[in-house]
Amino acid sequence: MKVLANDGISKSGIKALEKGGFEVITTKVAQEQVANFINTHDVKVLLVRSATKVRKDIIDACPGLKIIGRGGVGMDNIDVAYAREKGLHVINTPASSSESVAELVFAHLFTGVRFLHDANRNMPLEGDTNFDGLKKAYANGIELRGKTLGIIGFGRIGQAVAKMALGLGMKVIAADKYVNEAVIRVDFYNGQFINVEIVTESLEDVIKHSDFITLHVPAQDGYVLDKEEFQLMKENVGIVNCARGGVINEVALIEALDNEKVLFAGLDVFENEPNPEIQILMHPKISLTPHIGAATLEAQDRIGTELAEQIISLLKNN
Ligand SMILES: O=C(O)[C@H](O)COP(=O)(O)O
Image (cartoon, rainbow, N blue to C red; front, side):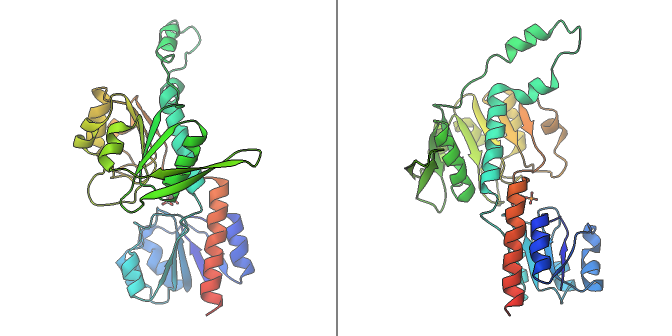
């Protein structure tokens, strides 16, 4: 049986699938050719990350397809309900990348409070006499320790972020439409751990009382952070979005950065992906990454293996 991994899959995933008797094709097929490729190669399983869109047209055109697998968390690039209605299995790997996304959040937070993104662009060339002045500008960093991190969306990834924040000595507050409380286990190198109970608060309270805000919500209609929300925030707040483009109004964000309400933003996702607006790309107070929250060896290994296990159990045991 053939599996098309159109946005790639880890070696461990390929190995596990091959061991289970599957043939894995990793050729990148252009979006408009995907349906044709599936039919001409008799592909039974289509695996994607966020790049390939699996909409009704592909689902309708490929009656032989049995499984659509999302290597990752967000399934907004797949017409999930429609596919299931048509009898397809739709699977994802919701727990495999939480730690990696959480670490990227901190990469952006540390970058923002110490201006690394801007300093990288402005290091002096030989003979540059202006650098001493610049250096002073970069000497105004702040520490994360002791500050309040507001987590909007307190599911797996939000809770992984909370764990790291507590380990750094930050105070954590969180808001979530569905989660009322969570016990966060913070582990130490010597095997000891502490449990910290966090009871979620209203979105407004989190927005008002945070020194830094990080978003961990799915794609949705409407902005979670818009002009009104920026007005409620503390002065010099830092914002991180490693969730989905479109949950922050980027025009309102740029305005808040320019009028010094917001100190910095760290963005892994954008309203206009994969090519962010030029105002976002060039902004000196924005640290940018190209949607790489789950792009670590470890996360991709777990994702590949987990997909393989699910596929084998769905197709081999039926
Ligand atoms: O939803 C996810 O899992 C992340 O956004 C990662 O997306 P990617 O697999 O395209 O990197």
